[in-house]
Amino acid sequence: MTPEPRNAELWKITLGELDEKMGVKIIEESVERVVATMPVEGNRQSFGLLHGGASLAVGEAVGSWAAVIHASTLGKTAVGVDVSATHHKSARKGLITITATPIHLGGTVTTHEVLIHNAAGERLCTLRITNLLLDRKG
Image (tube, rainbow, N blue to C red; front, side, top):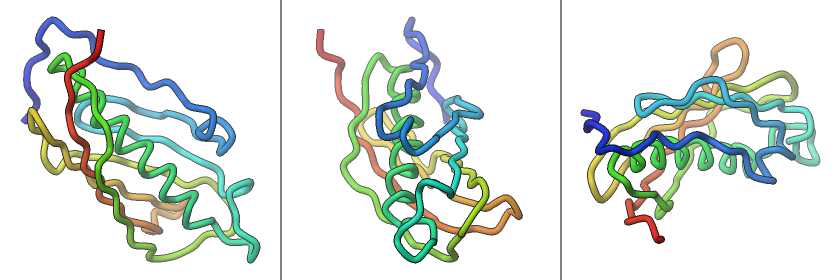
């Protein structure tokens, strides 16, 4: 499922400004799986629940990072073209874990499933993200 690297170094995740503000921490990064955590505190909406937009933002980031790691094995990069999410349950406190695994790793398009769980292992949100692979510029 994973192509052999073509003299390309695997891309390493670098947090962006929003990721840092949200308190995201990288736990694992590979073509097969990207795992991160994020605190609920600081990412809640006005009713004290984990903000759905925060779930989408962190889910899209983790799924995109997974796509870029795969793309780097082909000497390419990735850009998101579609993301959708279903919220199953909410959270008021604690740490959530975000895990991206590939559904399809192609040479042009990737699709990843991103699962968000609470500390008890309950699924809070399921995302699906599709990324387009592009040649690197320069």
